[in-house]
Length: 269
Image (tube, rainbow, N blue to C red; front, side):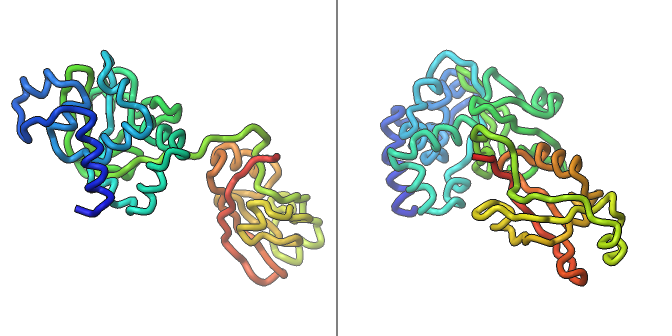
């Protein structure tokens, strides 16, 4: 066991008394979520993180809650450096938000989760549920490796990946950081594009996501997410991507070179 995970394991012992590694269904159902996770022996990092984030009380409370529980191996995939950073006291709010993204109010069994398709988490954003290759998956990339593990105050679904919520959107208008105008008929004819479906970038804001993505003034946007490049389509693409999301742009530069650029959506300060 890596030193950091060993430390996490030691911290986890403060959350619940030691218990046998194996339990009968009756034993497990008599334990709360924390006790059930402790008994399993494979959620030491999760338990230590819950303690660091001040979230133990809800997990031992009356509930019911549904916990999407990453294993120690799932946390280890983040790397020691990221785990250590999250466990720092000054990052308590960030850690709490990540952990709350793994908790759903109410007891949601796997069958109900599949029927619903998605569920709001205590962090706010929803998680999605789907069946791929006969396996229940969350957000399309986390596998449920054990489902419907019952506890006295809810249910646990064991997952093989830590879920990271999208960043919280600060106040402000969604922007990428460029100003554009319709292509002139002459320029569109020269480039061989439809003047009504292409936009000329007239300015790229310094320090913006557009500049970071490599967009330049006088680039011509020929397509937005594979469709026409219009003022409306750019607005729609930003709204659909949301803060921290990505808009895919096909860009013509100097009239001869077509670039495919993924620009992140930020907010106007």
